[in-house]
Structures are given as C-alpha cells and as structure tokens.
Image 1 (cartoon, rainbow, N blue to C red):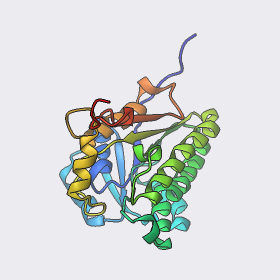
Image 2: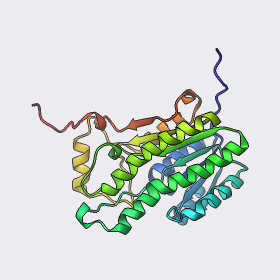
Image 3: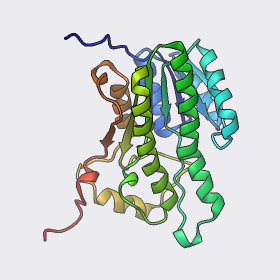
Image 4: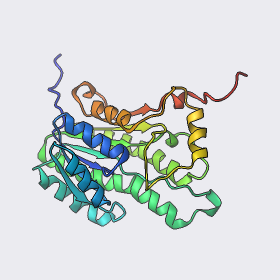
Length: 257
C-alpha cells in the first residue's frame, strides 16, 4: 500500500516569536523555505527579527490574554501570505510564585497564555484549515514540568499538563481532517529571557540533574519542531517528543545507592 503524499509546511504562524525558543523555531522554518508570520506582544523585538532575516517574515503584535481577539488574529495572520498550514504555539510564561503566596491573577495569567490561548488559537486555525481542505500541523511547546512538579511553579506545571492533554484531544478530533497535532517537551533550555528570568541557584540545580553533558539551546527545540512538521513525521500525531538531555529519565546528580 502506498503512503499518502507528504508535504512540507509552507506558511507558519509562530507565537512567542520575539525571542528564545520561538525565534529559533521561526529561523529554522524560514531556512527550510517556510513563510513565517511572527506573533508576540513585543513588537520591537519582532521588528528586529524581521530586519535580521533574509527569508519571508512578517510580524503581528498579539496579546494572548485577550482571548476574544484571537480568532480575528488568526484571520489576520491567514491573510498575510494568503493562508496558513502550520501553527506553532511557542509562547509561554514561567513566573515563580510559592503556592501559599500565589495570587489569583498570577494563576490566571499563566493559564491564559500557556493553555487557554493555545486552545483558542488552535481552534481558530483548525477551522480555517478544515474549510480550506488543505491539512496542516499544530505543534505545542510543552515542558518536562507537565509530568514533574516544581516548587514555585504550580500554575506553570498545571498549565503544561493540561497542554499535553489538549494536544491529544485536538489530535484525536482533527486526524480525519489531516491536521497533525503534536507537542515538543523541552528540558532546561538556556535562553536570555527578560520575561522569564531564572535564578543562578535554580539553573545550577536543574542542570546538575541532567544526564547529557551540555545545556540545551533553542535550536535543539527548533529541530524537533521542524521534524514534526516535515514529511518523515507524516504518521505521527498526538505525540509529545521529549527534548531534554535525558532529564526525564531520572536525576543524574543522585549518588550511587
């Protein structure tokens, strides 16, 4: 039996594209000939990314906490290059807040950006793709924190656990429309982030438990995303690909028992 024709993505919308993992994904897709719509709240950072890149980039400012505006935002992104076949939900917040001190608004903001916005964007994107009959890809950036709780991150860990199930639910219902829905689950990735700064003690501790002898970089995640959107992953949907230097296997810092 012959396999269906497998197509590379041609037009992608990437959220959280102003820096870090999102920017690396945008650059990687662009190098593979994909037209990329960059989405973020930080318009100045987006403009810098457009200026540095020779490929087809376009930038759109978006506030992911404004859920009511997200379907219209997808419509705007659709019109930039005349369609979309790929959505990369890379935007995410990782603030630290001890459980007993966490405010309701801190919880709500993380859930809005990390989970609710992904639902709204993915649903709007899927509706357009189903109407167009073209098929496509959704890739969500999850986290190893979806399976392992962390101190000060109850909101973040819960949002990523929900994101993993959301990925499966979308994959289940959209397979008949030839829309692949997968997740990439990064371990600790070294990025300079003004949005999600990390303390030195935290970085030393988390890197100490990682088996692989180097830190992760955004390009590691970008490569995994490109794979899931490419022809060799045509029969993969509903999966979560761990890219974590082996951190999910256990704690390498523990001594011999």
